[in-house]
Length: 231
Image 1 (cartoon, one colour):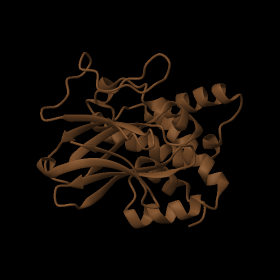
Image 2 (cartoon, one colour; image 1 turned 30 degrees about the horizontal axis):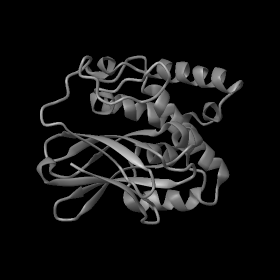
Image 3 (cartoon, one colour; image 1 turned 135 degrees about the vertical axis):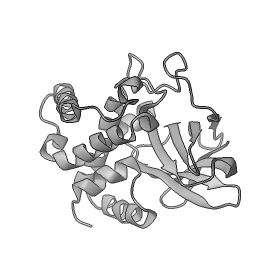
């Protein structure tokens, strides 16, 4: 693939099919510009975590474009100039629009602490849906940790994961594993410097029966298992 900015936005959200994600992974391995863009899109998602979940419970906000502009201004002020995403609004728009469309499924129960660190479900703000399952583990072999919240839907699941301890530059995938051993891609990302330092907060979904989920795993695109949470 060439510099397909909309595909990078979908890649950041974990919305690509496995073969499409592999094509993006191959391109990222050779394109420093797109690696930087994916890192910035991931940071943009982190900044959008600060939007209160209840703001999305009734559907996408009417001022989605204003939200994008405010977020870009914050990034510009933080970086001391114009962010690259301001030059590629299509990719940034994919992230904002998709997050708004997912609504509570994306932001439900998530808050950002004053220091900017992603937090787990906050029951004092929004009660977790019935049937939500949580798990957390640290892999002693490599120090990678993951906290997972799995929310059931009708025949599929929503996944919220906070992953820490993965070095910057690693292309990773979030997989939902069923009891029969099948795996379904729930998201993929390239670990940014900020993600390596502070952890990565990721939301996704998988077409797996909620009653048949065995684990949620993080693996590299080369197949190296980094951490697995039985749930």
